[in-house]
Each structure stands twice: as structure tokens, then as C-alpha cells.
Image 1 (cartoon, helix red, strand yellow):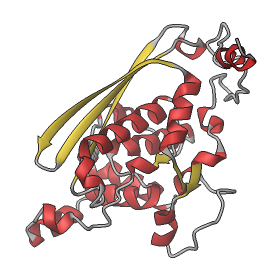
Image 2: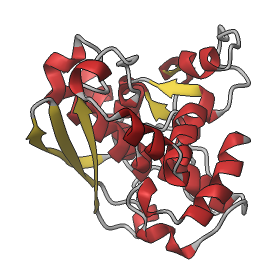
Image 3: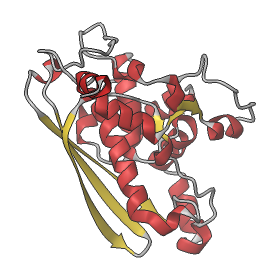
Image 4: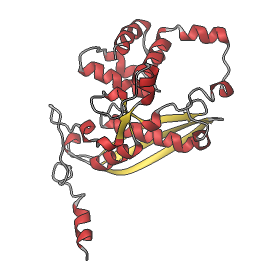
Length: 256
């Protein structure tokens, strides 16, 4: 047996806490693993759209950039999932309508000290439509939806607030006119509602293309004691947020 065959399995040995013996971990003040800090720089790059929208030059490196100015590659999410350790990954897709696919990803994570040494299952979902994919990717909606669901499942479970590159709306408006037609008066009224204004600001300021992504922003506000509301747990979409609360959040989002 070669030395490589002996050494290979040792790379994945875990200690009594469920952590890899050969990995160097970074921890939060509460003792939990800082999974955000475990992402290698090679998997991160500047969010070009974030800078171009603000008419700012796109940085050549990620040095000094905030999480909302970054994107993470799918490879980085896979690496993070392997580092955390999981038993299984399952997908379920649903063709909601023509050009609209919804996918859910369920991951059974290995036990570690953070989960009281018991395995835990976490599920998240995403969609892919003709309205939020590029002309090429629109031919593979199921795959795109599954990738997005996987990315959200991993990063939301591990409390990583960097948006995945696969989650970004890459349509650039190319398919909007083809896919949906709105009455101009109706669309104007919708755009003026507090929830729609908050959703638009969240997309522009944080790259959040869904309410699930925006929840990570709400968690940050809560941790930083900028905004706390016990009703957050009952919100499943922007439209669930009362107008008064939308206006409060809009002020905070615009400062990001």
C-alpha cells in the first residue's frame, strides 16, 4: 500500500467534537465555529454588479471588501460543506409552470459539538425561471435551481452571509419582456408599496434575489442590535412585513 493511500483517509478523521483533526478552525466568541472565516480566498471574488451599479471601479482583489460586496463560487460552498461534514444531500424539484422550476435541498449534517453531538437535517429552497437566468442557463433550469438551493442550504445553515455566485440573477433583463407582461399602471402602483421598495433596495444593496437571502441581512441587523422584531420568524416574504417595519428596514438597508 502506498503512502498516499495511508495518508488520504487520515485527512478526514474527526475528533470527539466532530471537527477534522487536520484542519485549523476559527471560532466565534460564543464558541461556535466561524464558518465564514473558513472559506478560502480562492473561492471569493468581487461582486461586479455591486460596484458597477454604484458607478465604482471593480476591485482587482477581495482585500478589504465587505461580505455584501463579495460572491462565493460553488466550489467554495462544496468545500465548506465537506469541511462541516454531511451524511447525505437530497434534492426535490417541481416544475411550477412553464419556465419556472422550484428546487429544495435537504442536507443531513454529521453530528458535532455545535449540534449537541447529534446529526441534524436542514432544508432550503430556491427557484430558477426564464426571468432570473441567462439565455444559456435557461435551458437548464432544474440544474440551476438545484445549485441555488444547495448553496442556500449550506450557507444559511452555517451562517455565511456572502451570496453565492449561482444565486445571482444573471438575466440582465434579457428575458423579462419575453416572459411576463404587466399592466403599466399596475406595475407602477406595486413599485410604490413599502414592501416592494424594500425588496428593490435589498436586491440592489445586498445582492439578495429572494426573501431567504434577505433573512441573512435581518440576522445581521439583529446581532448588531440595529433592528429586532420578534415577528421576523413569521415573515415568509417581503409582503408579510408591515409597512411601518418596511420603512424602518429601508433606512438601514440603504446605509449598507
